[in-house]
Length: 316
Image 1: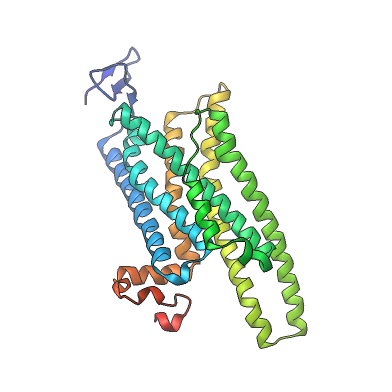
Image 2: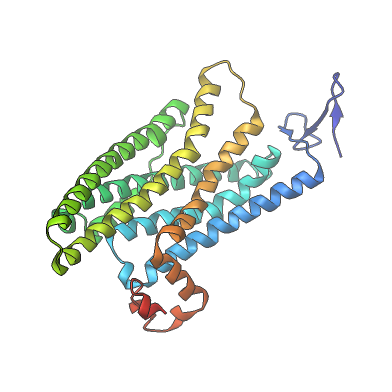
């Protein structure tokens, strides 16, 4: 192992051994390096394959062409691109603290990183707005939230906003404001859904008719979708709060934050992109069915796009 010893007899290794101006490389055993690279590769595969399945599902099956699912599609597409263009190249940076791909690609990587993460965060905000209108103003939902409107929002969202990279400004724009908006909307959704549930239970105690149950189903599906997407946003909070907390502490205080800790939290943000398909698989029956149809190549059937994913009998 190429390296030099400091006065303290601590071995130091540079990312570029012949350039002592390069960053210091994290020194680990070969076994640890191998394990970290294997785990990283698995997380990249999970992100790419999982989000690709979501993209194919929503794109192929016409029954899933709803405004809400289009936002899910947009989020999955952004996460898929993160898995393709960002995660593989940032593995060495996070594990070894080294960048081996040159300055030009570093600039390109940072630009793509900012754009795709901005799109992901914006999609989460639009999803929260979509669920807010569906739960709190259901009678006007079909008029306010239409497929063309959502398509326009997605296109505008993907244009991106490029500004000077300030830590505090990035924290406010990329994290604090989105979190405040999503938390506010989902708090309102929770209160309204709870009130609706009390009303439904009260009515059910007095009247139990077939018509009532038929009218209740769409409301239940909307609440279930809100719950699932609420979990998606909660996971986003869990993955992002530690990183931005450490970033603010490291930038504006004298408290030292270990570089290894920073790298772990940075990878946690990328890993968030691979978590959403797992959540969909756990809470969306239609996603499980569509994945099975995709993996068994039944989607190659010309009429497969018309399959009813919400009917167990048809699927079985």
